[in-house]
Image 1: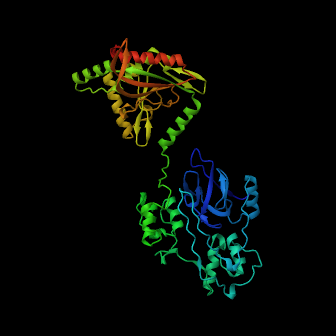
Image 2: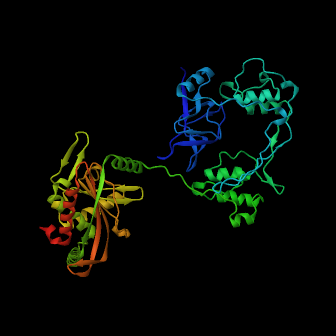
Length: 505
């Protein structure tokens, strides 16, 4: 079989199951290049323009405008000119797809179609406006009149138009790939022979046409702005782009419409014209893709369970204050103490200091505590590792965490500085978060989510006392860590935090 490629409904999100074909931006017989915008597809969340996945020629449109198809369904077929229609049909049959039925040929008097009566859409859509009626009429010179007697290389739309207008395509010169005749070639032939072609009048309201009538398909614009412009009859050439990356946004379309009195000023001010909210499509960075893949796999494969405990910080805070005031070169943070306390607790409960070896269905238990510390970056989250934290002083841990965080934010971390680790600490306390759940950093067996320290009323014996308390949540992989084991680790962590001098000996 000849080289035939399918153009499919893409999957633009995890929840996307189907897409609505809004419009084709190219016609059958048109050539396209990889990355070119070829089709507009609407999902339940967004409307986006499909980029061509390869170079080719659009031989067959399968997904017609207004048709809803599942993800992966064929909406178009690309093939070279040597490929027969029968081969394309055979290809579609093998894919379980069918080509759209041929539209009935319109009569000359009915072409182009009369505009439909405008109807109101839902509140999330722009109010529809009728398409402009054609002006003039198509007059075919006698030299072109006749019936096409032999096979010609023409697009389906061109064949239907020729039949409707009574044109012999033998008299039309094709300018498409390999001489294929398009609708544009027919219209050019009519004009060249002295005839006229009916054209659509510019959209008007209050008798005021817009300034531009040129093709605006190449004007950079957001999908919402482009759809709004079509509804209101605004040419994008008349819009002053103020959106991101120099694109026309929906506000620019409304400004142009008001300038041409297509959109009443009062309606715009009172908000009676309902529009979809503006948005930007932000592609995943390689880091964001890696994070998404790893954490999704962790959430799906590792059976998480969580244990929550409160840590009393007063003794730790007093020791921190004393060290920072006594040793000016050292500025310890609460998180430095937490990392050290976790390392000490891991040495007391080594069965939590583990990784899951999926390939061998085994548990890897480590002799030293390599504690990963979550660092938030504009592009995502990274976890540089404090190696052998159990053997290092608080000052060493503080300096290493600061150095690793600086490298992470400047993009200078080496792979060995963030890959691996036996346990992770993720601290959101500096943002005022009281408690949260964290997803395990695979292949590690556990992660500690650290909340903010705050003054709380604590019952001590028979009396109530004010203490500084921090809530921590331990997420464990139940394949390698059981509930009692996780609870034992938290008890040791509580002990080291309540009596911080213990972690120094």
